[in-house]
Image 1 (cartoon, rainbow, N blue to C red):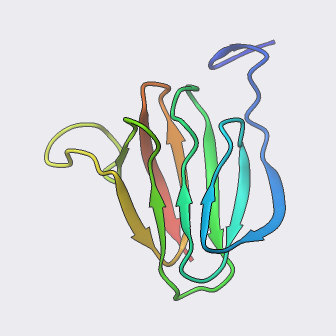
Image 2 (cartoon, rainbow, N blue to C red; image 1 turned 45 degrees about the horizontal axis):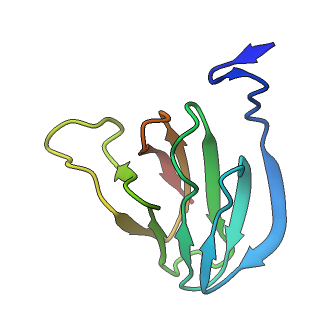
Amino acid sequence: MAGPAGAGFSNIFSMDPTVHSGGFIMPDNTTSVTLVTGAATVTLPNGTVAGKRIWIVTTTPGTTFTIQRQASDVIFRSGFPTQPDPGETSFSSQFAVELWTDGLHHWYLTFAGI
């Protein structure tokens, strides 16, 4: 069955059981919930697969962690690539976040909560 990015695409979430601290680069094939602790810096996978969604969840609520792009990817916290949000190279959160990509090197923040 063909998915949003063609045959063989799957966006079934899995849980990465490792709790990451410090710096962590998410592999390009990631479609999972990634756990971080402390003031970690998480680098997103390349935004080249349309429809890919990932979750980043902190195990230490209230502690700010940083989410950053790879290569020429841009992160939009407004949910779409128009003004006044020119896109960002990184942002910080202290809550769980969900992001998705359109496959055009754009990541969109779709959820930020506790």
